[in-house]
Length: 382
Ligand SMILES: *Cc1c(COP(=O)(O)O)cnc(C)c1O
Image 1 (cartoon, rainbow, N blue to C red):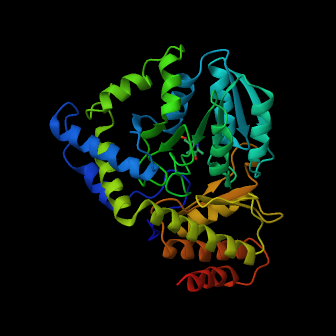
Image 2 (image 1 turned 30 degrees about the horizontal axis):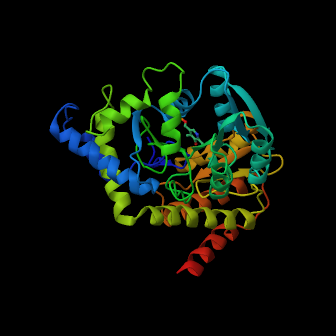
């Protein structure tokens, strides 16, 4: 044993809120009894504030991809046409999901690290009236790139037969998301990101326009039948046994978010990201994303240093757990998270440790240049 604390800096799972840990350790409730129903309904009400919507979001027992699948199967049927933005690993997931259910996929392929031009989406929809849905990420977590969801909402809402489906699993709680005001038809979230919980719960909002589609959609579905869930969840029930302990944790996490305000949670992630980018620049590092998100910062490894070395040393010496690249960026980048339960002390120490490791691995930098840039960002903010 050595006295090295483990510290989570991965963009999912993220550090779990202590209050949520305690709630999850409490004796389990029975999900068909009054106490649970009340707890569940309170979660739905608080989720509406996070989503900024008047319509009840649906809570599912699944990882985030489960809610993504629910969006696909409830909105579209085999043979329908979908426009999918693919700018990284999670855009690929939308595409794979759509193909698995026999949809016809029109693909907008981006360079990894790029964000979509909303005008491009508009042009596709004008050309092809058969496109029934647009699938996109608020933040493409494999590259750290953010998309302009507000503008996409404006563009897609002009087309009455097309719904906009946003994977906001690393958007909710780290980027501004105004579900109703921005006309976002489906917004998907997951518990292990800015919600500061372990994985196992997924959320999705469904707009009135999208509910109309769900009602007439013919695709068979069973576990993820949103109409059935909607009916049950109105009274604090779920179709199947939910991850009860996680719902207990969710209640605590949402109470915490209500206290600081969802805008406060977003502003916190935005600041950690800003300080990290300032430090990265001062360390002579290059970012992967052209339009970087608040959720995480993805950084190219310096020339000649293999990515797994950086991540390995951060873990070995400092117990600091970061993510590497996925798919075609494997071994080329490392990713530092800001979403959820992170404060400046976390960020500053991670950046300091990163400077040490980069120095040891031979990257030419002035020790302290990165942390100094982060400190200056902090002082400028006060
Ligand atoms: C984490 C993540 C997911 C969800 O993945 P699961 O492992 O199914 O929870 C989906 N999209 C994005 C953008 C993510 O960051």
